[in-house]
Image (cartoon, one colour):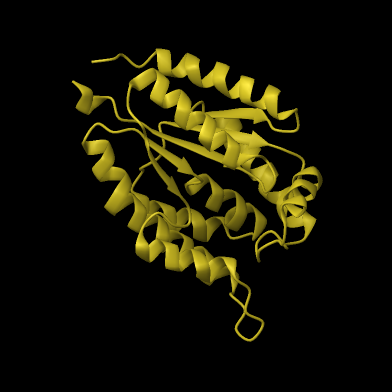
Length: 214
């Protein structure tokens, strides 16, 4: 039955890794192979309340700087809203869900980058109860190259303005989790966009072919 076919696929990566174009590509691939357009989400965000939280964590306020622990808590508040009100209901209907970031970002950015891994794991366990994507595509890129690309897009937000060492720690954490979890596929995002997209198509198509149609 089609109600059993819905899966949750997530795109992850550092700034400048090409997540936006990858999301568009994966959306089209899912549609080609399943016959349905996936529900697309982003984190933080994806619900009216979660989008307000996104504004809080993205915009720097010199008069009231966001502390690391508060940042972590806000990300999980937004995530649990999204899971409860959008992702799980869609999956229960047999729909596919495509996410621009999920919990792996918190493990990498707040856990590795901020040095808050015990707190991140505790909140993750308490709020997600083991819920995770069926498949994650991690776009791997050297932070210096990624930030160059991000800067070329325009003004950087509060998180993008972090020191390079922050992103180096985050990248190391992304790769460490990928090495331990076969549901995380690493894509070399330093390649040309055509090669990156071909790698995504090849690896994702292989996974999708294993999902039986109704």
